Image (cartoon, rainbow, N blue to C red; front, top):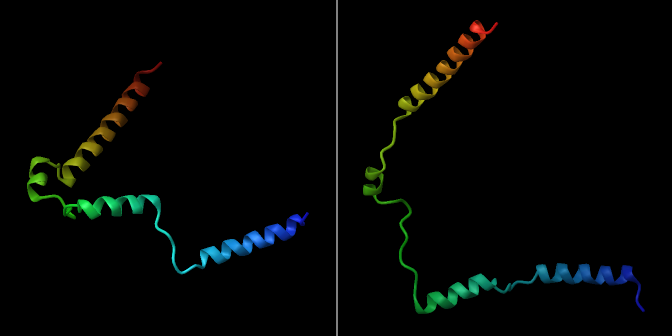
Length: 88
């Protein structure tokens, strides 16, 4: 029977040797995608959406959002002050 310390050292050496290998096998997902794309290549995917997508979605400008947030904070402060003033 071999010593456990000796086995651990050999296993550590084997892991370092395997990690240092020049050729690494691709993952299962990479192999699956390569096989699928061999018969049916993927279509082009745009980096940014088409300009008409942005036209459909209306965005509020920055200052409108700021006014809404500051107005809400001011309303909460006034309500808290009112309830504190009227509380017995």
